[in-house]
Length: 122
Length: 501
Image (cartoon, each protein chain N blue to C red):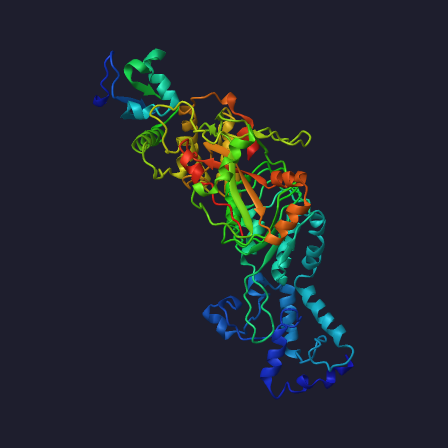
């Protein structure tokens, strides 16, 4: 995509998310950094290849799910300062895959920390 | 059989042919003699034209339309032979024609026996016996279901399901009670409301969760959950506005939902509220004076909510905010003492009270600050919760996936069964809480001025202190985002004027 032009110095404004079946989604870098995993990928200090190319390839996520993920990034970025956040529609057939994608992308904290809270409190 | 000849119906036969034809036809199902009706259906006859020149072959098929079968050839030919010498004679006693003597009962029983012999004698008997061994051990919930059905049929408003070894109560069991209608009074000229005054007793069971339908019973007046294994009450309990008695003592509750305060509002009718003993969180006070300032100047805030005059309800203190990650992991804030599920029952530790001037500060935010936008995980989980296949989703997860999914889906199932949680700040439904804190509210029954006088004069200070401690109820408040926290201004708002008579 032409919009994801990136130079070696200075971070591009947009990044490209590539699904396993080749679909590409261009989203704002700031919006995509909502995800802990993408943030780490794109961190210049991390020396990941993604941080220089601005292109994140997700071999585990197909185009349909990644489209929804990209939509969420935009939705989240757009509503970051609103008080009454509208709901984002998620079709039921995608819910389980999206749940796993969300877990994969949001994994900022380690799961071994999962305190007894969720398991016993309910 | 001697009476047969004197029966009036038979003597009529030659005169009125229709009667004699009709009577046997009614019993044709079990009569060995078939009637000779003209063919009505094409299946009775071969429909080809040359058949009309010959003698008709009738009643090739026998039995009702749903169990049609062809008569065996031997019988068919025999019947053809018998046909000319058919006489109007009774084959057996039907009981219909008999006079009312003492043999009446025997005859009807006989008649019934004949019917069952011809149709379904064997299956009937076996159906009475075969399910019996299965029904020997119905689950406690099935028994509860039967009890509820019985109460529904008889219009009994007291549904006593105590000491039934119930471990689980499903929504389907409770749902019929929503249609409960009182039996209208017979007295004329008196109009009575048909709203039932339901009383549900679930005491001394082993319930750990409650079905949401229980809280949809608008006419529930008395609810006893004493002596169960509840660790949490669903927030939906606040919907029971007509409740007059609530007993939740002898459970493992460490806190109550914040929504329970709705039961003490001026639109509610709660008279009796039993919560002790439970494992409620006590507050650890750093210093007495700092905490009590809020109560000392009750006029600083406006009345946040109007309470029922029978109850004195006031906000006292809150704990520090617990911040949770998107998957419910505890990130910051005080730890709630571990539940004593398997160990011995021990009283949980108190939770330190936050400074009145404490300003909640969330952990370091992610990319762009903190917003009220729900996480993608939360959104996906809500979508999962909306699908009817929710209970089966966990089995569709890949085996190498993180275990937290199972617990997350389990959480979604629990929320769906016992009613959704609502953010106590922004009133949005959520599945995974992001913030939670405990507020201690003073809930006590307001005494008449005369009673107060007696109480102050007679009770010792020790008793007063104990009463004071017992009327301090920890209420769990949960928020759906890291911004859903009490700020200082709101705390002041939430200090209502203490109700005084």
